[in-house]
Length: 382
Figure (spheres, one colour):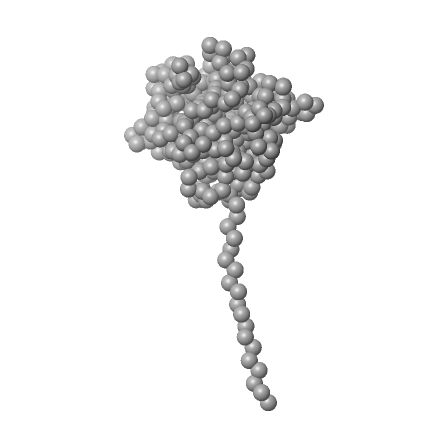
């Protein structure tokens, strides 16, 4: 009987790495017509054509930590014209026509800065989609390009609550809150690389608390036990969102670090005047009498002689009535700091001890974000 030899082939299949961003329809068009040398400032073809709707979008690109500026990141943008159309100038190749002629590129500089001078887009005809600007990102060390949230305008009547809630915050919030200076609409927009981008190669934090840097603050209604709005449930970011703000969340008042932080934050508030708004928000998962909780906050305000800081409370950080649950505060964190400007979170710290090193970190963050971005609004061609 002949021996039968079976050859068994074991095929080793290397795992296919998932595409960063999950792919997108039309992102590949960013490479068609891309200049070899891309500057940090771009003027779209429509900037000089539409004098009534000139728009500047300016900001910084940050690495995933939301703090470190990112250099050499290409941002490709395209949008509709003043008639809501992706119109052609007669020179576009067939495969680029769906993006229209109002398109361009910028590349972040060493400080992460970029500026796009263009025109204000108009919404599509017979659609409920707000007027928007598309953005695609190409990082120097990542193979795949990916899209981030469309840029939309906060005052657009089509920007409904439902639309806002559906936003994915890819790369950060895409909601622009523009101002007008010398007939130029100016909007600041920072981009956080990899933020809420599928398959992005970042290390995950084992312990985290609060929304991420680059995301927008949700409206919340804590009870004010001490401060300018005492006795109310005023929404801090609704009323004072234009200013630099610090929300300091604690799960206990029986920690001496709370007093040390409040004294430091009070000094910063006095130093910076109306340009800084600070709130302590007290909440925990335990049953706590409402009157007792706010009496404790009132006593704390009197003891520390606080004049600028607001002391507020919520039943718990999972409370839905006050909408505090939308901020994703981890009740196990001894403290969470969310620092914001113009409702957008520009930094955060978790379980931060009140020492010199951390005081300097927070102070530096406030200093770096206190400058008015109008100084970037000058037409550099003149």
